[in-house]
Image (cartoon, rainbow, N blue to C red):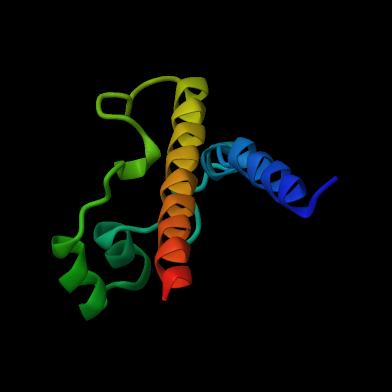
Length: 109
């Protein structure tokens, strides 16, 4: 099996496992996945909002907030898991596309 095939299988497994970021905090009654805190959660956790987070939280809005589709926030966990998988697939597709385009552009030079 070629190395690229193994890489795509590994990436596919990671996409399928992406809902663990949703399921594990739910299972262990945690508030959210580690490191995915917004400004409000950060204030609750450490008592203040770091200046950089405060500055850029108003500047940047995620294309797919909370890894779900608009209007799906209150759906059951199974639906949210599918949205996580969809979000992961879109993110990987965009990253691979950008790298592919950059590779084509840089190879010509």
